[in-house]
Length: 327
Image (cartoon, rainbow, N blue to C red; front, side, top):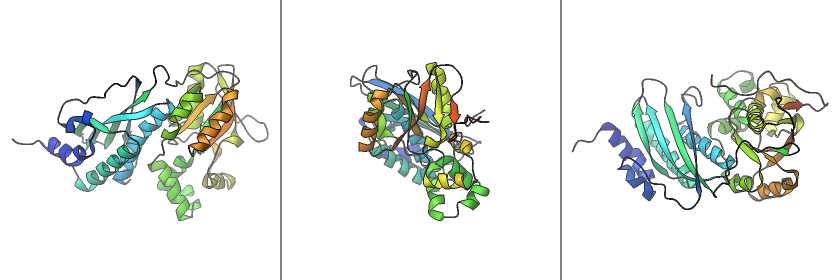
C-alpha cells in the first residue's frame, strides 16, 4: 500500500517519540487521555516564524519553545503535565530541520513527563508554524485562575524579568548587542529567549498558596494588568523589587535599556501570582526547596485603575507600553 508523504513524515520523525499507550503509535485518528479523578486543564499556544522565533533559530530550540510555553501556562494554573498534541505547518519536509526538531521535542516530552499524543502536519507557503495543545491535571476544582486576587495580598513573581527581551534584542543587533560584549552573557540572554524554563516545579506550590496566577508571556506590566482586570482590583508595584539578572541590571545601570523595556518585553515565561500575606513565607520556602527564586514586587489594592509602578524615590512612573501586542 502506498504511503503518503505526510504519513511517512509522521512515521519517521514523530512516531518514535509518541511512546504513550494513549497515542496508539500515531496510527489512529485520535488519542486517549485516561481519566484518573483529576480535572483536565487544557491550554494552547502557537509560535510563528518571524513573530515568536527567528527564521535562523536552531530547530531544536523551536521545538523546546513550542512545548515549554504551554507547560508554563499549565504550571501557572497549578496543573501537572499530562500530554500534548502538535500541529506543524511546514514549507517543506527538510530532514536537516525535522530531525533535530523531533529529537529535542522527544527529549522535552520525557523530561517534563508530557507525552506526545498526536496531532497534524500540513504544508504551507507561508511562515513555519508550530502549535501545541497541552493537557494538565489538577485535583477537582483546584485550578488557579487569573481571578481571585484581593486587596491587601502580595504580588509575587518567579525568576528574573526581561532577559528574553534582551536576548531578542541581541539577535536583532543594535546597541544591546554591542553593549553585551561578553560572549557568555550574550548566550545566556539569547538562551532565555529561545528556550524558556517553564516553572513546572512550582505547579503544586502555586496551587497550594496562590489566590490568582498566570504566566508572564507578553510582558510583566501588561500581564499584571490583565490579572488585576479579571480580579477587579489594582496593584502598586515597586520597580526596584522587580527581579533582574546581573546582565539585565548592568544594561539598565549603564542606560543601554530602560526598565520599561524589560517589564513590557514579553517571553519571560515566569509565574506571576498573588498571595494572602499569611501564605507568603510558606510559599517562598516551598519555592526555595524546589530551587526556584521568587520575589515580592508589590501589593494588590482596591480599585479598577491600571497598576501603578513606583520608582526608588517613591514617584509613579507612567509606562508608554505595558506589553507585547500581537495586533
